[in-house]
Length: 94
Image 1 (spheres, rainbow, N blue to C red):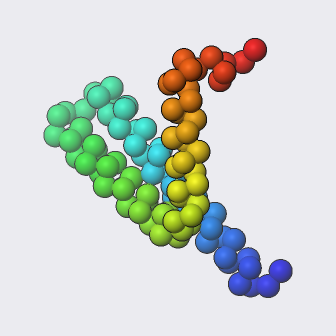
Image 2 (cartoon, rainbow, N blue to C red):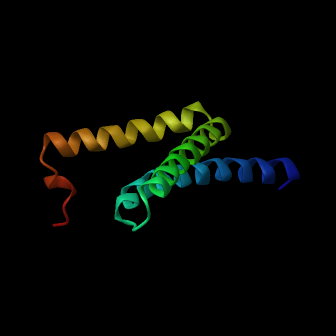
């Protein structure tokens, strides 16, 4: 494996990790109302999570590329639509 292949693969995975990190930051928004900080601190925390989540998402999309992002997005949207239209019965373990 030459150096270009090694760093190309590292670049691809770092983009995917940034996309995952953006999802984690958005999920962290659900925990903000549960912390016992002042309202001002919660506002700053919310703003920071949204800003960093968006930055990670955009940078991750630029690194990974349009085709990978659209593929995963289509897969997720398709599975959510299937789950909502059929009541989610096929996703339950049997």
